[in-house]
Amino acid sequence: MTPKTRNSQGAEIDDADVSPTRLFRAFAETRRQYALTYLAQKPAAIHLGDLAEYIALKEAAPTYDQYQRILVDLHHQHLPHLQDAGLVRYDEAAERLELAVDRDVIAPYLDLVEAGQ
Image 1 (cartoon, one colour):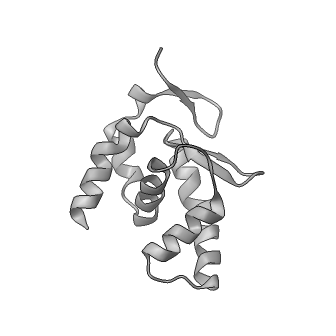
Image 2: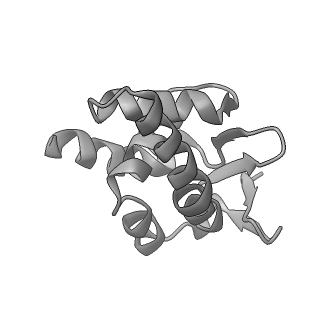
């Protein structure tokens, strides 16, 4: 049985359907790289605030104002993009998110990100 995910429109996406183009677009922004790196380390859904805090620390700007800006940016820009790509499941009401694909799907791209740092 092949794992399936759903994008924000509710359509199922097979892990095999996550094309390299979608992955490169997802990894084009640093905050999305941080989000996918963090989610790949977690075995279950996490709270949006935890991700925002992680990103603030990665950006070496752990202030409350920066945390708030990151929350807004994730909610309005990055999470919808990752969700549409079929990489992340995000429950807006509960503010919880998780990786929607097997870590193996994004592992080569995470390795590229780590090598570039």
